[in-house]
Image (cartoon, rainbow, N blue to C red):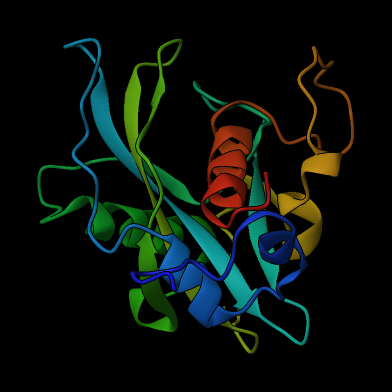
Length: 194
């Protein structure tokens, strides 16, 4: 007889189990990880990974406008740098979401957190916040910051068969790379899909 806690979602069973609110929430960190910057010059920031509650869960992405000083034209999650009047990095992510795509913070149910991420080339230590968004949301896109908003099926973007390490040309349609791709891989790992 074996006693102790058994994780029912390991190996193949983890890959085959359906994605659900409960499974996602259980895979996330319940409290924000400490931002441990490897470089003292890194500035704190936060992004929100909005999981849209449709019959098939999807993730909402933005594509930044081409004229922005950092991350121009990139596919990303709503987010940005911490401001002095933000009480927490969670508030930063929710404020940025509202500024970029017009969704009030009350429309998102924060589910948990992924591992922090650093972008050494642009100088940020980022807290990824994961939240659930009801499907009846209405966007008010800030066209100065956001060129496009789109959704992708969660199961598709988490599937390791759709992940690749390679050099990409930025002209490609909806190529997700860099910090955003790393956060997707982190969620895939936490769910036992990798």
